[in-house]
Length: 272
Length: 283
Image 1 (cartoon, each protein chain N blue to C red):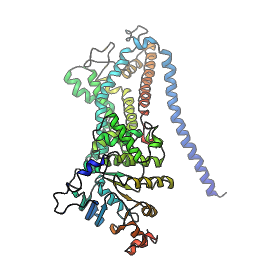
Image 2: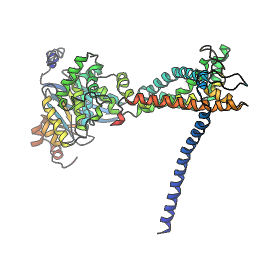
Image 3: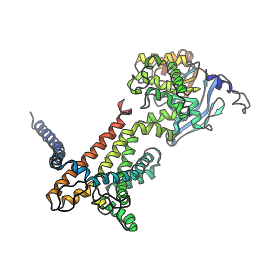
């Protein structure tokens, strides 16, 4: 497996400069993180640890800051003018704000709310991330495309139409294509921003199953409005409300015995 | 039926008919021009028109081979100047520019677009023809090229802006730089609109006469080179159309038809080429 090579170099070596060694079971950590859109504060002192090789769900009502938080983890917020974070976010002990943004996004991939395949063939969509990284060999690309499509459980459905338009397949397939595209560059973390919100229940179930199987190769953070989805798919769940992280724990704890009243109210559907 | 409802229905019918009549008028004007052109031009069109030089004054027959090639050369020169500047300028406005600077550029581009074509001719005349002391294909090409820039800029900009943000984010999230994203995802997604826009500008300047009158001038023979006067179809139409000879009038009609056909062919050809790519509009 290709992941092995990056496995060797992390996490302790990278964090060697830090006094206490970076714990291997933590992939990312936000500490005292504030976030502003212009003068408006969207996040207030978020402290959250993303466990390695697990699925972490972020839930909360619309506008609570969960997507904002997700978009900080790969610095996608930078596309918004006047958006700025304050505080610390570490990836394997390294400050993400001082990393090269291109390098960071190769390590922290993202899948969006609506399937957004490029107007290219299925093959070219998957190969895109590799090509921009300078990988050209036909055989290498073909192998990588097949591997990514298999990981995204899409290979069997599209193997005979790799050179057809990515828009020729269904919405659920397109979303798995986008997951395959993100996986092709072998990210360490995969961020998913409501990846099933535009899909029907069957396509949703497929994606959840797929995410479960991806735990071996990457850490995942998923924003979802669907609480059943969080309960089914996630190992850990964080509840956001009005820009604050109210509670973060194992999913079972959050859904069965939440410590805070706000969490309980939200989960039982009393607001939001 | 109350008075009010009746009145509403009348207004409705009147407005509907009015818009319909105007739409019909638009189409019929176009077909009228086309029909006229095909009728008169088609009658005078023959093989000699495409391969022969203009006949000496007073002699019947002859053709406009030099003007057809000349128009092609002028458009080539114009495209070499107008397409890269217009396209890259449009990319800058849509993808990279800051707010104030873009506002100024956009405003000036629109002003430039409204500038009368004869002014472009004077401009090229002043900065190229006068220093060179003679008319030339270069001067004509430049006048036309400058005229292409504003529409090329704005159509490129608008086509790029129509590309959904999520496509850009998809590429950025894979670690593509801004420029890579634009070059490999956004521009290919918008290429149809961009090419259509550029073909429109080309079609527009292909028919321009005024700026050529005192830049490229005209030529009754094959042009002796890029910095010599050169014939073009619009100027030939102008000269022949105003002449006193029936034969020249017929040739002017033929030239009009050929010009239209060439523009149409270029348009269809370009659309055919880009339609084989995959567009984001096909979602």
